[in-house]
Image 1 (tube, helix red, strand yellow):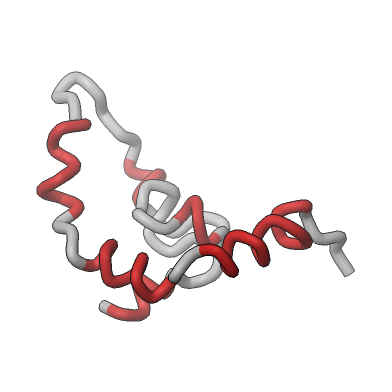
Image 2 (cartoon, one colour):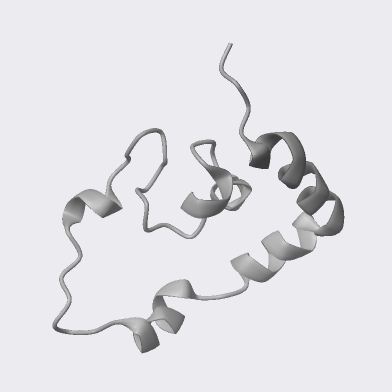
Length: 81
């Protein structure tokens, strides 16, 4: 059995207790992320395609909206769509 990380053991339960996940999910789904992200894009930066493909169990690659939060399991944001 793999040892749990500090995040999994201690921090995640506290953060999940403090955050209204349903409200956060509704907020995230209310935003047109493609439209909003234009402010951060630069024509001279090319993002390699492999960042946008499924990778190590992260559906949609590392550049999707939930990769950093849901670490390999399917995001509830993806389930709601």
